[in-house]
Length: 430
Image 1 (cartoon, one colour):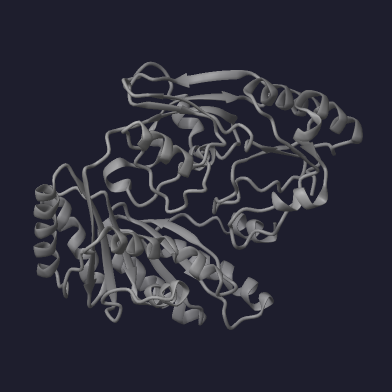
Image 2 (tube, rainbow, N blue to C red; image 1 turned 60 degrees about the vertical axis):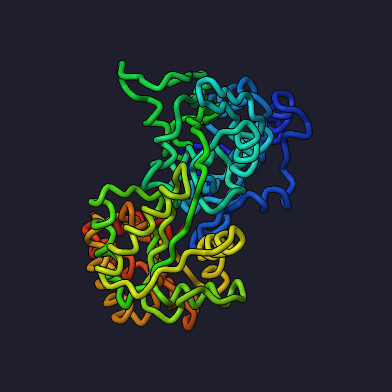
């Protein structure tokens, strides 16, 4: 699909791009274009770019964007394609600008606690590099194959947001290329910057619509000496969520607080082929703690256990080994792939005040019954981010596509979010 205001890629343009980038950095092969035609978004249909371009440096990105701007060719930047928002899908065709070759860790500055990286660096590679220097990058998405550039473009969050915030709280500076080919630098290694407009924060989360990010400066810290995971069963989600503000009011700051219901536990147990502790209860909190000493962490864990028991918790499970801890966290990381294999499925990310999560989930379950469509709920209790997954296991695609927009409309209205049905319907048509 090409919008009328854009033009198509010609053979001559492809040859010009090869002259700018290199022959092996430009491809029109269908099999390669198919690899980059979608991300992990379940509902978005694949879209083929007309040409894939893989620059190695900022100057090349600038020349490609300048050419595309002059010829009015649409450009879609792409990282590793692990996103769930469709931001890297080339719905207008044109040029798919893959940043995969810009994958260098340029510097790890231990004195200023800053890592400077190119956008194609993967989270797993960054973790390994900074840990080798005795430092710590705290963003934890549960998907270590995600690229740093994609994290910045989507303002990725994750399970450690309660203590460390989301991506935008960990970015100190950016280099980016505007659509005209102009290169700009915003922010820097300094911690404080209070002069003028905050263009850096405008670029973070803009999904490539404002500029192509080519260099990122990330805030590092020292690694915690001790980490524990608490898995706490409750008889109801209401009781589980009621405990969260109590924990925070007692001046305990966990790294993350996840909530989940029994239905997702059952699904992931089948997927990983092992049982989760206390799996027969109705709702659960998974709380991640970090500290400098074993005593500090266990004192916090003891206070959390008391608060949760007071709010109706049944018991508290603390893994007895690093392996058991890792297996519990891995089970949480597998929620999305476990759901994805069930067939027709979609995702909604809804933000509500933390205290309103139980009431919101209650409304969602009513919507589920009204439309005879299972809706799985879990998410980040610490920041009010609810992940919802409508499932179409017993429907054909026509029925699924008829019901789903109405389900989404009711979900977002239940969350008090202004509904743009025209946008959602357009999204489903793409």
